[in-house]
Length: 427
Image 1: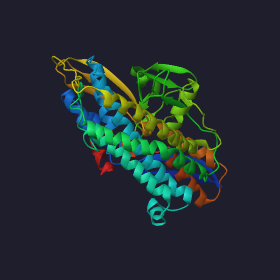
Image 2 (image 1 turned 60 degrees about the vertical axis):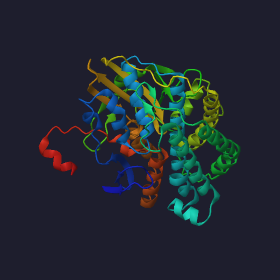
Image 3 (image 1 turned 90 degrees about the horizontal axis):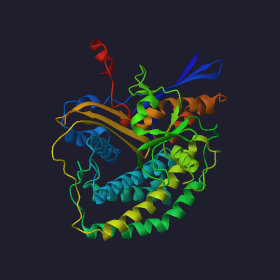
Image 4 (image 1 turned 120 degrees about the vertical axis):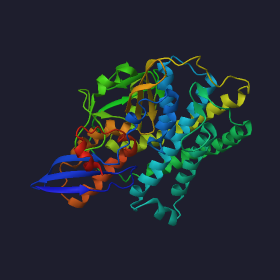
């Protein structure tokens, strides 16, 4: 028996590794371990006032902070039956889109583009003055500017608050953003076409996993009250626990989705497939790239996000400065609330139980990379089952992991220690 270890995984967010077991030269087992230091947020928020939680929760990850904060706010508002004003909803969506653009730009141009050019990192591409490399950094900066204007700052946004938003950004800031957007809407078709021409992907098997995402029935969106999965299956987002059946696993710091409908696939490719099934996505992606089609789906999503940002800016520029920004709650009340949202990497769920004094009694967070954990291992096994070259096994396994755009930092937010003496295992 030979064990090949890919450690650390490079050009992904967070720390993890892949272990490949070979017997008589043939791959027989794959283990994906997410080993980032545990973030104990689900335990830390218990006993806190519910309006404190979104700011704490956004600290799970700097890259995903806006998505976590908005999802937490929406779950708590759902628990208390608070409906935020339309203008606040528009600014929150703008914030999410900024995060989507900057995150996809980071993944496509900083993490994937080096693979397509056969270089170790984007620094080498910048040194060679590859136009796509600089364009990717510029696109990421644009997404960050959207987040700063809509959220108050790039990381851990302050503008989204319980009941809506705290303030309306200046009209001149929105106009400047709209002018910059026009340039990106003009240039993105050319950039995306050049990116898609770099067809340097390894041979791949069909995509494994049951696609799962939230959204709207009749239009592509990042938020929704339902979960679509598989072939035309739909449930209320609040029923997520039965679908996913997350359990702790001894070899990883992230919970594992063990639901019978799985293993689950979430992310841009899953969103595109499910949207195509509901006839709200055009130009369905071809299957010949396997899981690497997730990169192509992200390219497609950037185009959609740039279009949607334009629609929102038109609305916000016409909005009256006197429109309400926040819905006030007369007094704290108890409830149970769930919110589902599409983070750049896939489905994110927050669930809170709140007592009558507005204190968090229980919390549960389901993240995209935790959902994808099982299917990543299965996909590596399927794609590399006939590969015998050790260097190739390591290289392609790592590229498969990168295709999922994992955020390991978000995935390892809870570890339950049943035996206090085993704490040393995590030190």
